[in-house]
Length: 203
Image (cartoon, rainbow, N blue to C red; front, side, top):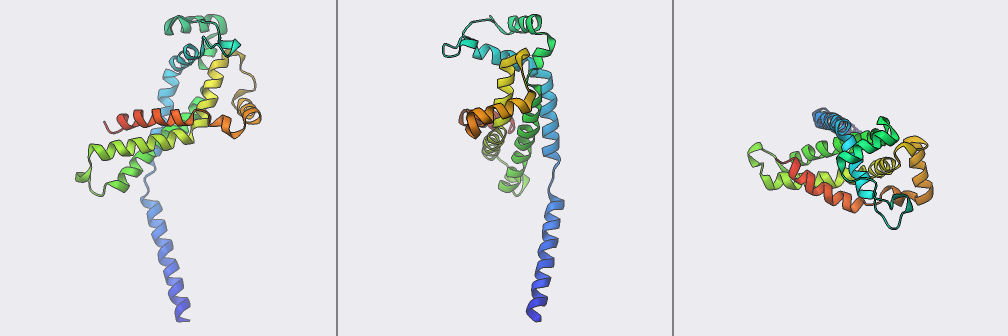
């Protein structure tokens, strides 16, 4: 009977500790980080789309993109609007927003959470620790959000020829290329995010 009472008391104490931990967890960095990233994405998306179009043109191994169609960013913007319509500048905006909702949210939230793990007191905060937290949060968030990045780039490349929307393109990649197709380029994406976030957030 004594053992049972002790066990029950121990379980109640652990439950109360868990509830206190959940109450102390600050979700604001995750939410605000995601909202800020989505807002920035909507404003800069046409520029990102033209960057993708400029990068994929002139490929020798892909007949669809072998021609040099754009001379620069401004020329690409004007030509896309004339030939495909204004709506084409936002081709792939759905996965881009989903990417920012995941990548941006996880990036900011993970950065703040890692800082709380490594830094017990505000006076212990150093640039080196902040950079390390930034690098780790960049790698983690970009790796998780990589499928949305693949979707965004594929849909940007298609432009006005997009068929099936975000879900249709997702299923097309999964059926034809498997899970590996959704994580294409993840190592390079993670390396880039490590550098960008490692510099961006600590400053």
